[in-house]
Amino acid sequence: MNRVFLAVFCLLVGGAIGAGLWVVGGPQEARIEQQDRDRIANLRTLHTRLISMESAGTPLPRTIGEDSVCAAWACEEGGSFPPKDPATGMPYDYRRLSDDRFEICATLARHPGTARAPVTLSDDMELRAGNVLCLIGTVRPDGS
Image 1 (cartoon, rainbow, N blue to C red):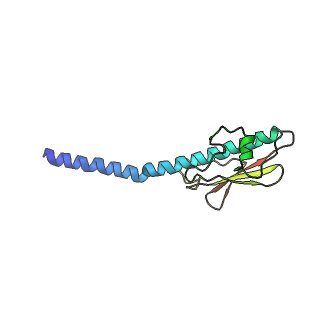
Image 2: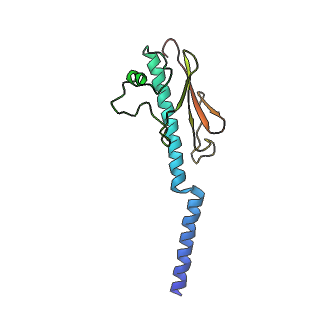
Image 3: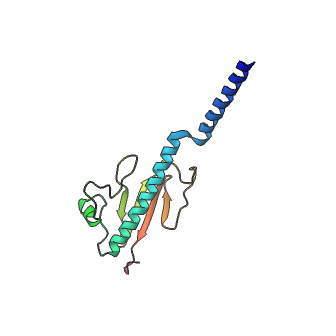
């Protein structure tokens, strides 16, 4: 009787663990969602840095991958700025739209609305072509 009870108990516990992983998605899903959160944080960091760089009198760069840009941002030797996509190691898609407008885009692994912790889009964000999230920046001439 005790063996039957133990077997049923083990099956129930195993089933509960399996169902929990199926519902939550397991460690791989958590890793993917963390990478998306890192991508969004990186976009926000780049956005802030570009606006502050322009406010300090340095014009918007043509690209964010140039060594001169890193010099303008006072990157440390071997530093990780500008940040890169956490999964691919590739730079984010940056476009200088005009002298005072730019956009930085990242391709998310999950649609921001279907993630376990959905992303709330702010006024300066656009969701394009499914999972491409862009942050649009406008630099004001007065530096604000």
